[in-house]
Amino acid sequence: MDRLRSMEVFVEIVDRGSMSRAAAALGMSPTMVTTHLARIEQRLGKRLLDRTTRRLDLTREGRHFLEEARRILTQVDAVENDIMGVPGMLHGRVRIDAPASVGHRFIVPALAVFRQAHPRIMLDLSLGDRGTTFRADGFDIVVRVGEGHADRAHVSVLGETRFVHVASPAYLARRGTPVTPADIVHHDGIVYASVDRPDGSRWRYWVDGAPQWLRPSAVLSFNDGAAIAAAAIAGLGIARTLEMLVLAEIDDGRLVRLYDDLVTEPQTISAVVPLDRHAIPAVAAVLDVLQSLRWTV
Image 1 (cartoon, rainbow, N blue to C red):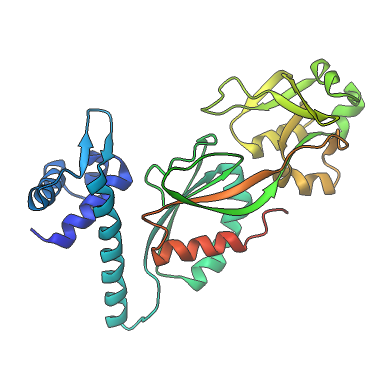
Image 2 (tube, rainbow, N blue to C red):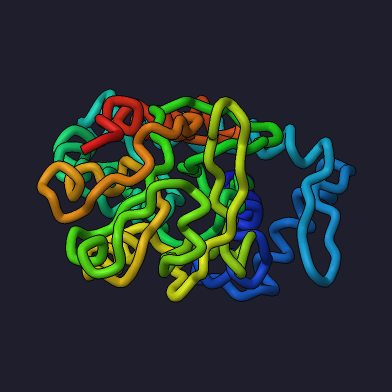
């Protein structure tokens, strides 16, 4: 059985998180995927994955084998590219996960320039709601906003933003402008709800250096920053969202910034890369592009 193919199968199992998903991605039968893994473990005399009915976990030997398998497969790609007449041209597939609003506003507009520079790198961009979870879950790069802890990963700071409170001029004309944080309980709130906080987050303010926590009277909740901004622009309530997502709308007058004198702590925009993928040239190239972006508008 082809050892390189077995390495590819093993990497796909880890990246996909299950035998069945790896089989579907590779166009193999689940039995063949299981056979490849069994042959590797038999040859090494070590268990690479601890398998239960619900999840797969890498053993210590499995983590080491994964790192080396990625390195070997990357080198093979480089040699093939050289022989095919494209020396130095990066090749491979890079999976990125980012919040939908962040991805649409900042990453997608940069893809055309990236494709021009790296036409043989295939990007797989997942945009959705994973809260502030920093787990890689099969991705090469995970973009997150806010504090978090990433195990066995390299974290690159891409930029900073902060939370702001906004409402449309029409809403404020109709309902009045809140003066203090306590006034927010008398207004309609547009809140962010995620898989981590399905009921929505409390809003935090800093007054005289001390935090104040208030829960607005929520009339709408979304798991997407673009939807929050759209609802606020439509005059449906007051929203607390990331400044990076509404700065253009504040500048053109569609939204009004509230409580601007209340200091809010910076929120870090981070790119998290598992340690075993950080040295892969294609992943490094994508990370370079992310680090070059202007993470405000």
